[in-house]
Amino acid sequence: MRVVIAEDAVLLREGMAGLLERFGHAVVASVGDAASLVTAVEEHRPDVVVADVRMPPGFTDEGLRAALMLRERHPDLAVLVLSQYVEQTYAAELLDSGGAGIGYLLKDRIGDVREFVEALVRVAEGGMVIDPEVVRQLLGQRRDPLRRLTPRELEVLALIAEGRSNASIARALFVSDAAVAKHIASIFTKLDLPPTTDGHRRVLAVLAYLRTEPK
Image (cartoon, rainbow, N blue to C red; front, side):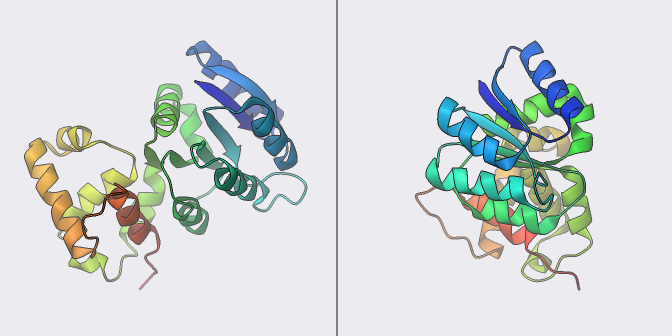
């Protein structure tokens, strides 16, 4: 896959580029600010962008804003956003941009090289990946409509938020694929997500999860 990296920390940026190339992926551009990210995407048309949330000049949310703008221009562009800390608002805003191929990971996740590369590939292939730490923090903050879910359904929804397939969820919970499908159908029903033709109910379910406010 063709990747553009946007990260202001030079060592981290070059480290990501090196490990992705080691796994056989092409890093077509590696930049240090949001404006350069936009230019690089327009020039190279990558399959996926890896972008830090906070970038120059203000170090607030410039990277996220640039990623969201690029998704508006190129709906098929996959985006994996990195953050130093859990910032639930940013994760929800990224998911709310719609479409496939979105991810939100903490920078600590890069330390597990294989896990990071696999997450990036899932995003590039149109999947969704939310950092498990975001999921864990949200588990203790749920309100309606998540109160409708059983403990097992909450486990399933947490694994969906991590970007796992039904088969992967079944392996993690030691249940059958059919049992997972049944749990997911129940989750959709309890979260008032009727069948649609756009195939985004998993994303909508995770959005409901991320938008949960503290009690």
